[in-house]
Image 1 (cartoon, rainbow over the protein chains, first blue to last red):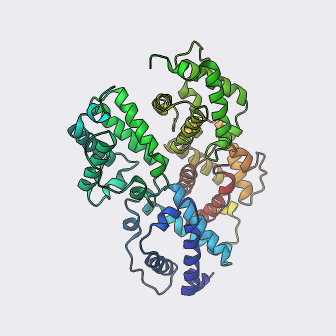
Image 2 (image 1 turned 90 degrees about the vertical axis):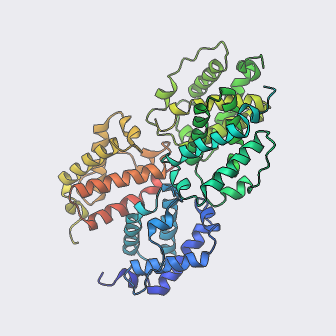
Image 3 (image 1 turned 180 degrees about the vertical axis):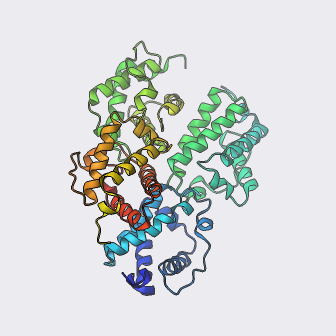
Length: 120
Length: 120
Length: 120
Length: 120
């Protein structure tokens, strides 16, 4: 485990595939799809997600978006939606053949962000 | 009960007081306040609410806003939020000394709108 | 509207049909069916529901069950489940060709019980 | 990380303290306390939790309770309740000075059980 999470996720390319697959999953997940269908610029949202994941996993990219709290402020996101999004991301990891250790690390990061996402 | 609901609610003035009190209640209700705190133009939202209530209660006003479904699309409003908003509105009615028959009528109207509000 | 709600619902027979149809709806409603599938004695639950409805609607029956608060205590019933149950009951009323006034009265009664049902 | 999770959690004694602290937290957590207040035999519930944790973490204990699905069947546990319980457990771990790696492992285990707990 001396490799960074960024490397273990396949770098920028691996993370880009992950974001694409996760967003596709969100768009067909009845618990959150209305949130994403209504996103005005889905390509921008994906770009921000890629940057955020890359930077958070130890990659050289810089995240140019707003902080998590500002991003989710006023959306009144529920625990149900938050869990649905985590499921989609972990499902996308399985689809991309990323292992249990990587999924555990991503789960821990996502869980640590919860306070800036749910009901803020 | 030969009077219209509009008359029984005190006409445009009564409904304006009701909307003010309900929005005040929303802004201090932990279940929905983040939604309303983040509303960019709260005065416009109140104006639309007044028009909607007045028109829906049989008054001469015209509702100039978007239909309910379009208004709530993509917000992923939960049953918990919907019930919180109904409670605030009925509480505002009690505060304004509006009776059980009026509350029953408003409850029935709000309930009939549910399909255009929750998880759309 | 000089008739009691009990009479307008079709008396004990009408209410019994309503309870049967509502419970059938609960058992196929994904939001609450696990609650009802797991009810140990569904016939007893139906009997209690019939008595409660009859007594509450002004009929001569006596409700022999526990009060609403005690009945729901510790179940942590959510707003989502509560709204699902109301939908099933109102749907059963429509199926039994009960009109808008009756539905409004039942809705008002169910709403007034909310504080003894949700998250108690 | 050559030690088992059981050892890293402090063995049977460490896990017993964890369960006590987690249940205390549940009993004062507004999102789930009614579930636990109403548990008929809280000491039995704690015993089962200790056994389950010990066995699941690689300890020599045997879990003598029912499987997770049977245990939660019909309770209609929501994502909100599930997240509240995880927060309480992770909080109890922090209180007991258990580190980030241990919390990550416990989080991963709890998450993997989700399908047998929520809305079953």
